[in-house]
Amino acid sequence: MKLFVRNKLVYIQKVKDLPDLHRFDTILEGSKPLKASHLQGKLLISCPSTDQLATLFKLMKSEPLDGLDQVVLAAAQRKPLNRQIKSMFRIVKAGGGLVTRNDRYLMIYRLGRWDLPKGKLDEGEKFGPAAVREVSEECNVSVQLRHKICTTWHTYENNGKDVLKQTRWYAMDCLNDLHMRPQLEENIHDVRWMKPNEVNQVLENSYLTIREVFMRYFYHYPQELMPFSTDQSA
Image (cartoon, rainbow, N blue to C red; front, side, top):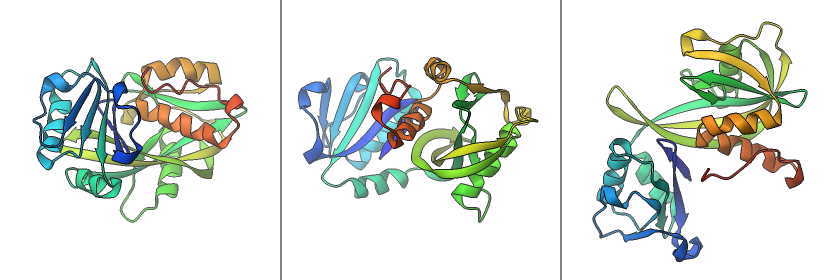
């Protein structure tokens, strides 16, 4: 599981699958107290305690994170740790789309960053239909679902509550963009078709979740066809 907190990567991994420990700047055991000063470079927390997890997300919400590269949480088994982390947030489910047409990709400009169209599921709605609906509403285009790309998780705060958004992303084909326009009431101010090199440029002013979607999308194709930078540390 990859979790994005304020555009920083928190990665849950099995202890036995850890890479060379020398790559980490700080290593903490589960019994050690976590401090704001630890949020620098690459941080490894081995077998994190409940208190450590609570402190981590509290600090990541309130402290400057400019010097932090990523956090790795290592446990004997990932699923129990995943469940524990999810229990600390209110889960919101959403669907989104990476839409293509004539070797171009549909991007939206929202709240000062380039993004992909997505939105929350309505009550009783499935992920795929929700993703198609949200793309249609936010961009005023007609699309056809192709396949699932990946699921991303990111945190945010809403009315004082800590939220963990689960977004399932789908590849889509554009069927009609004759009346394409941004949904202004959703703070979307531009909708634009971009060539691969243009996408690579605007990803510098985007979110790591969006880089993740593009990276996973191109896993469906030969490596030499991947036009985007996949460096998560950039």
